[in-house]
Image 1 (cartoon, rainbow, N blue to C red):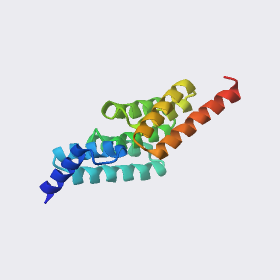
Image 2 (cartoon, helix red, strand yellow):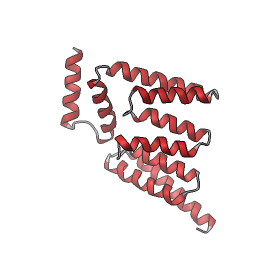
Image 3 (cartoon, rainbow, N blue to C red):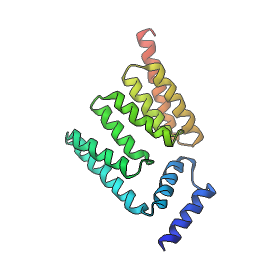
Image 4 (cartoon, rainbow, N blue to C red):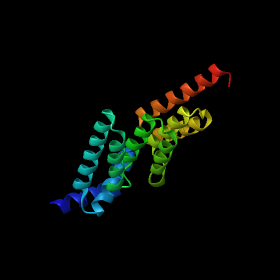
Length: 171
């Protein structure tokens, strides 16, 4: 039964029947299937992300960062671990490591709208408006092509905020 399920998922992924915004998730599942442990890997990642988020909320920063790093190690092509780790870095005001972490997503998913958005957000927090705007525009472009309306709106709001900030400072 497990082999049949894997075969159907591979056929589904290869036929392109999924939504464009699900491409990353499908690729991650396909890679995990090739490792023969889809459910186990996904469950492990979910558990680590949940634990890391709880630890971060309680202020246990090193333990949270370790949990997110372990989630990345569980599947290096799953953006969820990188996103959680990068967002944790932002929370503790370590913007350069956040940018580096989000950029790693682009190595295996160059059209990941959320990664572009988060890189832009981190640059914006550093005061690097021009770079932030470039990433927000890329995020909008990819979100639009992937029909990801929520990310498109977030990216557009970032661009508007950057433009408003530039006008307020006379830049």
